[in-house]
Length: 101
Image (cartoon, rainbow, N blue to C red; front, top):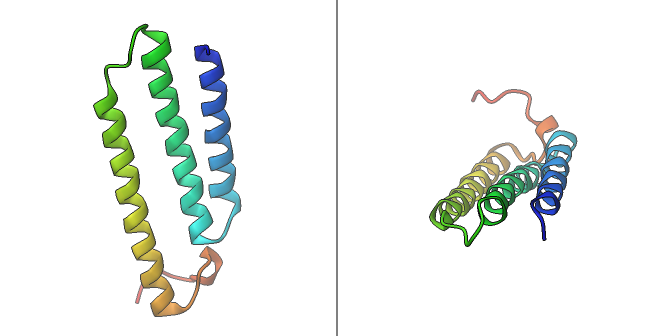
């Protein structure tokens, strides 16, 4: 496996996530797109560490921290989606006219 192959896969993940985040109106699909983009960035960073520098990656702690941040982001995001759905009964971005109230 080469750095180029890892970067191509990371770019595909980032591109798919960007398309999903920009084209979908559902909150859940929007958050999944954001997660795909973060996973692509994480894969690129780990690929650079492991294949670009040589030897085993030494920044595993940063990767674990990024994964923990992603999990927290998803939990907070789903809590916000649940709160918006309970209050306004909408599950798409088009259903929200304003964030005030």
